Length: 335
Image 1 (cartoon, rainbow, N blue to C red):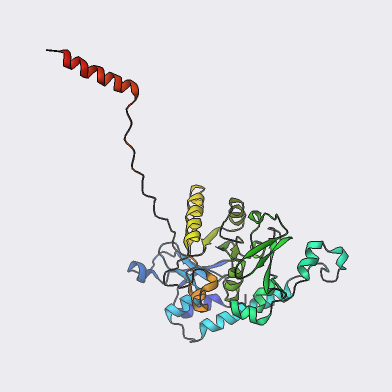
Image 2 (cartoon, rainbow, N blue to C red):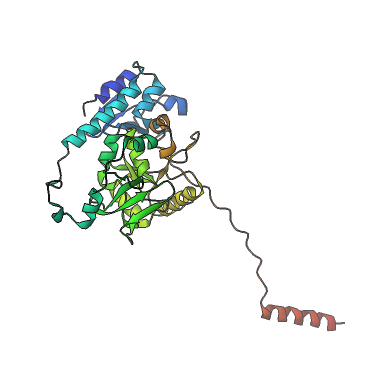
């Protein structure tokens, strides 16, 4: 990458100790705030590709933008510059990505009926992108389409290798999957576009595109509130670190607790997006500043333990009742 991450961190006052292929390691810049003393044993690192940092010894974590804002970098527009850099990098990736083998030059007869139907939809209009806060490069990256006849989003449903299995119609008041009978419990949106070993699990594919529009990569979606065990297995195979960012409502919280308990028993330590101070119930309703500054690497979280049910008193058996009655009668007969 063209960004000299080591120089940026040193300008911010971070002591860099070493650098490897994927991460820059150093002394944690948040130790004094969280622990009251400087970091003496390097326990902090930042991902060179995703530009997110995390300390394994204290709760210090977040994005490079957040670190620049917290430590007061010299450049006042550093956050905007980094956001523009992320967009330019994504556009460059799209241009440099190898084209599919003559997919667009094939005759319609060589495409499957499903692919011809999907490609017949149009590019989303600008007003639809503005309403959702999406960028054109992000929509192209995730191959979203638009049905102008009914103003529906057309979202591809692909397997883990990117092969089209169907599509989802997304309207303000309903969601419809096609073809009929498609089992989306085996599909995860955005899985084959992951470039790193971490992911942010959300409910709606449009939330993934929204985060990518703001420079937050790693988003995957379950095409709805329910997340199947098969989808979790696919995500675990690709990601070493998973952040649960399901909707902050009753259904989303129930799913969050269920997933956390099931994965904890299997040895997978999921993290949870902190919605404290955020008005929106999901990443799609967050402001640009909230998405850019939200805690991607939240501390390990544990849901409250359910209250133990009171144990019912044992009901005496019939033989015990007969024995007790016999003892009572025997005691009455004695002088």
